[in-house]
Image 1 (tube, one colour):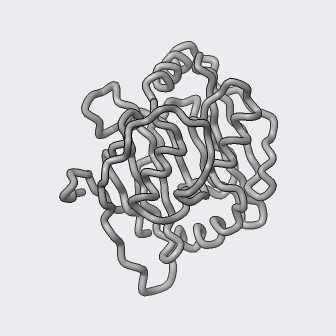
Image 2 (cartoon, one colour; image 1 turned 180 degrees about the vertical axis):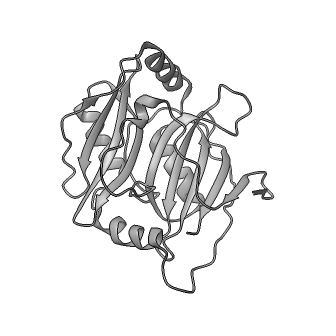
Image 3 (spheres, helix red, strand yellow; image 1 turned 90 degrees about the vertical axis):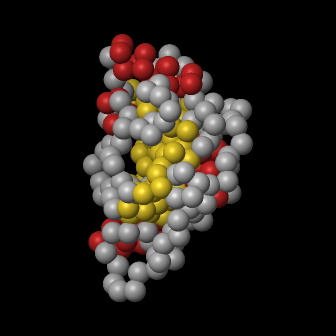
Length: 233
């Protein structure tokens, strides 16, 4: 782990696992896991809140692989192109399935023959719902209510109140640094913020020339890049 000239913490290797509370982790379903959510930086997805402008923080470039693809690279190469519906469209479908909700997570999963988005949305009172969205047709399945634990709901409601940056804005910030396909996005507590109350979006971007994944943590208030991780496996 090191720091680039812009002060962004740069990590290499596999990114850390999700940091959100249990109710969002419950969104995960059976199927092949791809650390990501498909769409480019020009996506038009979830509804907008007002967010601060993105800071110009250049990403560290990575070299293209010279040998055969790793298992993770091969999995991304097989799955990502099959998703005709991007992360923004998937979240839009999920929000439509749960009235008065906001996007909190999406992840591309499944197989090349049957890709889908595992999404999560929540209402302002912290009630979370998992919604599976077909990554080819864009059809959303019946929402599945998540944790009813009062503390979980209170924590999520507080996180939603703090976050003024939308999923789309966070994804745009990430793809401005690394051109590629967004394959995962999730709202959680920041692990490199200025204080323990910071909230941030974690965004995974797959580059289709080498099938690497770069993960960014982006402050959910000011869109500042807090850290980035380059997974070259």
